[in-house]
Amino acid sequence: MGEHESRRRILVVDDAPDTLEVLQRNLTIEGYMVITAPGVEEACRILDTETFDLVITDYKMPKITGLDLVRHVRENFKDTGIMMITGYASINGAVEAVKSGAEDYLAKPFTEKELIGAVKRALEKLDARRTLDTGTEKKRLSAYGILGESSAMQRVFKAIEKAASTSATVLITGESGTGKELVARAIHYNSDRKSAPFVPVNCGGIPEGLLESELFGHVKGAFTGAVDSRAGFFQTADGGTIFLDEVSETSLAMQVKLLRVLQDKEVCMVGSSRSRKVDVRIVAATNKDLLGLVRKEVFREDLFFRLSVITIAIPSLRNRGNDIFLLMHHFLRKFADELDKPPLRFSDDALRILKNYYWPGNVRELENVIQRLVVMTDGNVIEAPDLPSLMRSSGIRAPSLNRALGEVEQEHIRNVLASVNGNKTKASQILGIDRKTLREKLKDDKSLNE
Image (cartoon, rainbow, N blue to C red; front, side, top):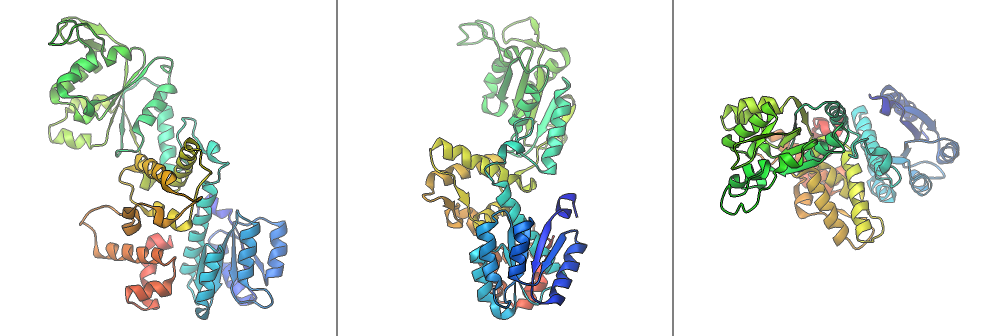
């Protein structure tokens, strides 16, 4: 239990003293601060004077029902989550509760693990809403202008700070679309070289025959079409930083020339016999396994070690936790402002699908998806059917056949549950198993119980 969760405050409402005692004990053991109320009227009085992250209420209670409390909380306490507890005979009422604004519901009888899992899911939905709050984005921007609160991104920020304090060569690794150039720019603009040029070069986007001339420049008459002498990217970046993106796409011959620049701090223009001194910091990036390419002898080992004095690994979007919600909100505002559209928000179903999607294109793919949604959505709420069909159909996990049968089965169970808004009765009917068997399978699924 982390420090953040230990501060979570939960109000439990039930007219059965034994149930209140059990819930309070189990949740307190998990580190939550728990207050109890024997009915809706008392709960409302407590809510008027105290703040809670989550309200857990029984459905059937005398005088005023839990459904009335659900509506009251949703209408008056937008920053509070709510979860319903119901008996087997009240499934329809539970569905109505979810439609009225409850984050989740539990059917009696339930185990301690089911209780804790449901509470965590409800709090995760609450966190998503809070993260998307329009007033919090600026506070979540790092000192480097990069959005990210996850522990993985905090490690990146610390690495940027250390890299910016030196002139050592940096190698940035990560999948396509993770923001490697943003990190390179953060290093440069927080270093002593910030007043000098930052020059990005896409090594994979320049034909091999032109790359040497583009990097080092050429003298007049060096080759057909060289009617004038021209400086290269290294000379342009003198005193500053050159960013060599997709450095793995360079040929072995070009790698030798890059190694010479790193060793001698000199460049030789194409067609010239004289070398020129340059003061340039090199930051390189790749989405490939450079060490693996070294073993295959398609990338020079000595250049690899020269480039990787400092290595910064950028995490994939799927490994950044709730950062996805920060980024979604940022892009929503950006494109809505560009199109002069009112603020948009996501439904809970849409948020769940986006959170569970594999994001092979990472932040760049997320940005493109959000732009499409802002352009194509007519209303103010983005619903699950508005999302690309690829996301709705599978929530795509790694596209590989090297997966255990149990993993595939549990993913299918999660997808079915998502399609029926968490209704276990409907899910078990679709899956062709009884509710007890479904409950046992969910116990084995750590992603639903952690």
